[in-house]
Image (cartoon, rainbow, N blue to C red):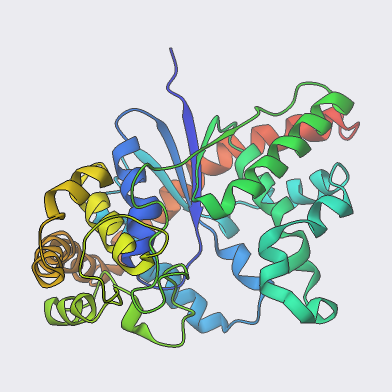
Length: 329
């Protein structure tokens, strides 16, 4: 019996942070032994906003090195650049005929990114959920690992695929979203109501996978908590709750287990233990990233092999969609 197929992608913005690792990459690594995995550097998604081509090239290489350092194995997974498989853009156009304008206008992330400037937003930013649907459907993926903020996009993908199938026949597999239990959404250490992100005005709330041990320790010790002094999970304590989930994700533990373990501890004791946990997790990854970045030919070889495998699957799906729509022989 074939293994369930997984497709997931991550945009290239250089070396990932701990939020990327716990929210996506750690689960990717674990899935490799029990899933048929396709992991994509989603570089086409970067053009929805202004960007610098040279920075994009450097960021792609840094991300590939980071994914390999975290434990993605080319022998067990297909790792590839989205832009190297032309069917992604081709299927996006076909799927646009089965996507409604109203559906796109209801996308929460589009509203958040544009707010009062929708008139100046690019058409790519408005329609990129169609590209995201194409990314998934090209590989007959049954599962898509995503954070909570992406579930709406997976629902759109499912709706578009079902609509296409009802019009043209059973072309696409209908995927489902799967989310991690702990660490699915790591928040900024200084602004714990915001998701950890490189776009924040300060890097003090972000734990990079190439931060030094001292930098990691300093950021965690300065992480925002509250003045109560009691350790428990609560919406009223977003800073402390975020740190509890962070430790749970790194230790592969249920967050209530971590909460019980530290209920009688001081904030300083909990933070020092969290420092040890984070450093122990990040330090070996950081060392491997540097090793991979020193071997550019090996990174290129991995991407070429991934392109060949991904193109074979995507090409077959694209041809199937074209024939169903009446194109070709």
